[in-house]
Length: 202
Image (cartoon, rainbow, N blue to C red; front, side):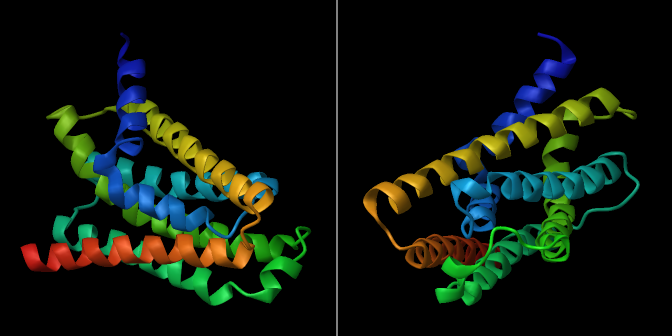
């Protein structure tokens, strides 16, 4: 197996793993307000998140910026909580009436938020990647392939969530507002539990 393929697989498995509860929960909260027809918007959000975490992942892995692990580990569930709360606040009758032809200005805000939260998550990824790389000074191929693996893993996760939402909304007949509130509430609960566990451990 080539070096590129090895780190591509590691990046993919870093997301598609039960050990990645925090990142999986964030993705769940991120795409909760969207339906399958909004898949382009969801891909844009995930890619914005990837751009954000790729920047800080590279900077932290190369030693350009320092990482305070306890603070970053606490901030990651905070990003989930904020995302879930925004979803729950915006859920309502307007959700069903909202036009899918939103202006680019309205599109920019959630993308910018996803990229900002990606910066935080990238610092969280860096501890794992640095442990894999050891003392390697210029891991360009490893960084590129790892980030691509993370992106592929994220796209798989959100695809599953969107397909599940499609079945429940279109086939079972669940109300969209209920779907958003339940999914966001579940993400909020998991993130709060993670944060409490960290405070207890600290």
